[in-house]
Image 1 (tube, one colour):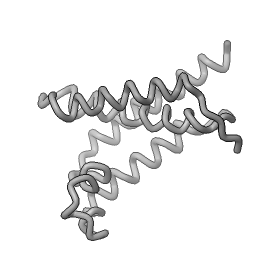
Image 2 (cartoon, one colour; image 1 turned 90 degrees about the vertical axis):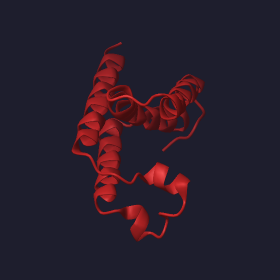
Image 3 (tube, helix red, strand yellow; image 1 turned 30 degrees about the vertical axis):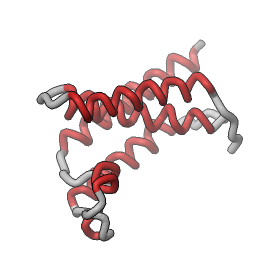
Amino acid sequence: MRFRLNMKYLCVFIIIFIIEVLIAVFVNDKFIRPYVGDILVVVLIYCFIRSFVGKEVKLLPLYIFVFAALTEVGQYFHLAKLLGLSDYKIARIIIGSTFDFKDIVCYLAGCTGLFLYEMVKRRK
């Protein structure tokens, strides 16, 4: 696997990261924070990986979905508590603490969008 810095993906990663922070800090609604935030997080992970991995990884959206879904399953089993990290706020934020099947659906929607993006990109 070849590593190189891709400024386009890095800039998109930074922009989405800022949006995610703004959503987490300032938005407390029943749509944007729980749904749009979860869709954006898989795009954030995708852009981060694509920032450094030069070679195209055909199944990257699938790998990201599996990672996100497993993270959500970890929340179901209270992974932060099992790892002794429940006293650390940052760990609870990263790992999460509340399981919700709707989150997995949002991850699937985001990764489906990434698959479609890659299909369009390959055709060009």
